[in-house]
Image (cartoon, rainbow, N blue to C red; front, side, top):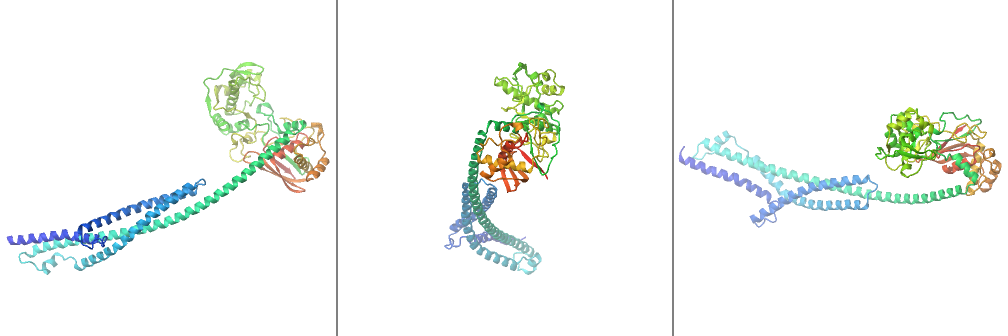
Length: 604
């Protein structure tokens, strides 16, 4: 190829390279100056570059801030949702979130200002993009044949050389143009997305601000309501304390005879299974109608520790002795390394500890193994507390019933239960109390059932005859020593007599010694006759002549809280504890309510 052609081609290539370099720079410079139009009017290139860099950095920073703001907004929303479910939220927490929202809105306001500037700047970019696109599509790109035949070829180049150089130039021009268009499109799109995000965040924050104000108002209302309820409860507490104090004063003023009646009818002694016959019998039929029967749940119980029939029911349900102990006493079973070998027993002196336990007459030996083991551990723990205090343990129901003959010849199943649990006691400082039947509720462990009381009570499942019984006998035996009254049922007139006794009892402050059973053959004394009591009630309040129906409320504390009666004078409500006291003072013979948990049956 001639030297002159190389020279021309070399110059042409230099021009091409120069254009490829200067064109993007020119376009980028043109784009960037839209950000700093005011600052670059004087033509200071260095100043323009600084302003461009500043605005680009500012926008990148703004985009990052917008992302941060979005995260903060989501955090605020989460906090409000969380606090909405809390009743104990404080004003400080609400004020903290309010301050967070204010900070976010302030930052968002700055971002909106930047976005407005960006919007103005983008107007020039929209125009520039339009021009570039228009020029690009008007100019187009010639293919090799069009360049070869349609272009004027310089004299010092042949057609192929010119085509090759021209084609390279056009491709470089087109590529750079498309890059710039893409860049502009991306920046415009990014702005639109940021603008939409900012508007969405602002709307969400305003909504959350409204939610927070609503929450604050709601919490204020709750606080006021809680304060009112607290004040009401304080008043009620004071009333109840006065009522209890009054009731205790009335009991303190009872005559000696009345105290004896209360003690026996309430069943203040504590009974265990081993102390009396546990054969189930049916309540005798009512000899008249309407008839009212008071039914007690449990009897002769302190409601503490373990229910023996409950332990039997649990063992029958598959509970092992450790689980039984844990339920009733709230503590685990543990081995005691320094367990004493001797125990001091009243009337017998010192005995081997195991031999003493063999003689505990507290539970039938044919009961389930785990019930026997639970009883052995409770008995051992109870005795251990006496030993640690340096006391001798008694052999009656006041401590634990002990039988020397059983100790000398223990049933094999009971002996095995004692031996298998040797040195095991209940952890902690529990006294390990227990009783036969608590009626399905104990002070330490609450409701003792496997579903719904009373039908699912473990004592009922175990077949305790004292789980629900209408008492009319003097002692533990259910059909013996009834003072001539072989049924628990009371007539409508007798129930009205109970109410009249309550009227007089309340009016006297619990200090009327003539309120006692009219069956003097059982109790003696000088009770009001039914007619005398009606006259007395008529003078101090209302007199009642008949009762047609009765119902009760049972509280979650395992007590009968209210008694509702339908009478000839209308509906009447009496406190459960008061009703039980007056019922036991006045009911004939040995008819009694022996549990704090009771209800009634009516035969019509």
